[in-house]
Length: 226
Image (tube, rainbow, N blue to C red; front, side, top):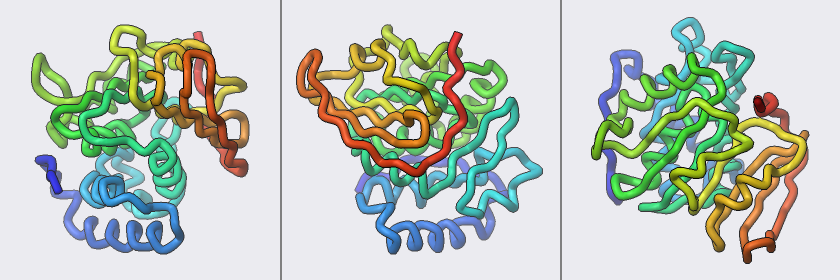
């Protein structure tokens, strides 16, 4: 299986061993199933995406604050959402509510060098944090190189310039699925989006035809709109 290059900090000493335990537990519980997503979880270390004062807490299977009223999601939740999203190599993916960049980096690993990830964050400070963290793995797009591009914007409007998308991941809760996201998803594409206290899986069957499944029992910070 293709491996992506990574430049890891000294903070990762001993962390991969823990991640193996966490990954094994998520596999055992049925949250991680796909080889490519399992590999991404094993290679992209969450400790690189939390504030320095919370490094020890990065090992916990819980959501953690990253500042500005936002959080980095619980690994269990991210695993569940990515398995629903089913991203593949070489796909074009939109990551809304990218926060500190963890989901963006996971998606970069999955889509590989021939894929593209567009990350949208409402807060300028978090957008810069996400860029910096993702660049630790060499994924930041500079000119023709890299995979990820970060932008500040209203996630409910998506990012039309890089559309249409094979996959759309939304990591903050909204009251309804924004029409712009529906329009920017390819026919045959998949979207995972939190609505209130549920995660919704959507697959676009036609221009105005969506297959939907609801998975209740989750909590997310709200998606910030203009």
